[in-house]
Image (cartoon, rainbow, N blue to C red; front, side):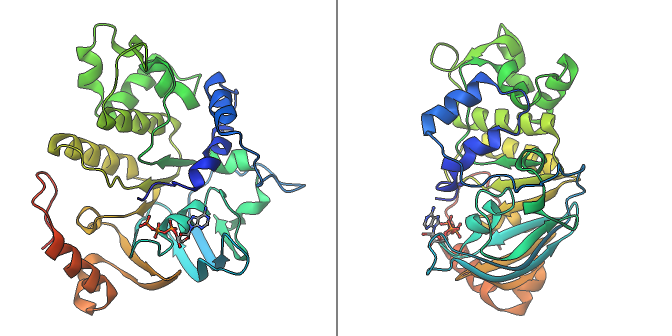
Length: 303
Ligand code: ATP
């Protein structure tokens, strides 16, 4: 399973990026009983508004001291570029991406955004400029409006509606008698998995961060939902530096760059066509997945 599954326990920390401590966050944090071990360095300064150029420079990391998960990672991601990470399960794709919001700190090397070592800026200012879309969406009992505006309590009606529209939630909201003020959760309307994901996407449209991390869904959604979410995510990625943790090759063939991660290192990188032509690891992964392709409706079959 992709997801920041293990780092998810750290996600509470990311909620602190929301300046006015929302009660929902506190509940969530209490729920997970987090003792954050990544904290601001003495003298850390707030990051300025970031363009989103991300550099991994000789990055090494392991969850345990004597078991490196990543080593010697050198990668420069241009501001606005979409980079998809592919590779076998357990290769380190999720781990690599979880270092950017500092769910963990590197053991070696450094990660710099716009030339700033991410350990030199405050966590709140770093994470406040990173949007994360993952499979497990955190919603709290409240209205759709409150859930969308979660990270931006100052957001106006128009902004919230626009975010919902761009996340392809407009039709759903229009169909509900109470619209944006519909209560969701146990005492209200139950949202489907796909609707929850679109709500999470609406949140990020509203937050408008320069950097995006997408943990691609592995669970099957119906074709129409899949298509809607794909469109919303494509639009969300526009103009932002986007790191995609890819589980299916078919959905990332149009990425600006594909990076093949294996055994904790970068094996190859390039565009889909070039990597296929190179006949290396990507081509092998691709062939393996092509053979395994199930005729799921809505998913563009790999050639
Ligand atoms: P997948 O495609 O299955 O999501 P991945 O490429 O994203 O895999 P990671 O989840 O980054 O791989 O895992 C890389 C390695 O780190 C694996 O060996 C995994 O077992 C290990 N690992 C991941 N999270 C933790 C953790 N919190 N503690 C210890 N080991 C971990």
